[in-house]
Length: 397
Image (cartoon, rainbow, N blue to C red; front, side, top):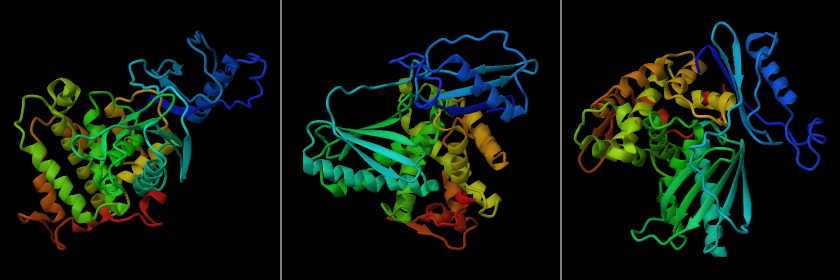
């Protein structure tokens, strides 16, 4: 978001006094109620009142309880407002039938767990217990779910390669959801080892960034699928650093092309440059995480920025430009770290120099295992990145 923009998410409660008569039996939020929200937002943002409304169009109804996002834009001459609907090209999926839903209450919200037919009672309980356990990994970022209400839909499949989780996808829009294709016959221990759920849960921390920003989005989820599992005890810190090492090594071994990282991300589904996009993005977030901690002597972190972004800007019902997202994270911390590193990484035509970063963190490749130097320049921040959260962590400040 730039200085000429103001965004906020809102919904109008079904108990609002204006709804019973507008219209009986099929309530729709009146336009005057929406304009009242616009006026209140303008006063909070600029301390100003509406002097006039030259043109207002209501293109579609807003229903009671439906989430919406208000956008105010100042071009220097006038202030325009827009309440966008979910972009029509966002992916969606629908399951028809009668399903039992179990609600898993967590700090900051709830997960609504649904298992489709084909998962028996014993397997369902195994999956419910596992979901409750793995969902606590995402809490190790800043202590709360990123979104207040998320449906987790588990679809039974038969794995032909022994995976407990065959595929996962996060879905945004008027309802936020995770779709997981699971093999319910696999033992519980294999679900604990799988990274997919932690990856998809991490996607809930950011808005939709479009194809051009997919390296930021997938990089965040790829980085956190390892870091958050270490913080929550599903991996050891050494195992998490090793998984990052393996991913960086594999992605860096692919031939460099002529495209920048941003171009590769925009064309990822045509070029299949998935490993470069995901793991170069993970290197960006590791670099930023280290930079913030080191430059502030441990007072700032990416978790603090993401926690504040949750409070100001999530849920998001419109896509964000990636440069606006990182600029907003910078503004929330009063730094330029996210944006300066964003410009650097987006323009790269080669894979990031992750080996230099690992060396500064005091992580050495010793062949069969990694070694950790307690006296390295950034050893303190290496340990802090993987450490379990405590009650006095920076995200609570």
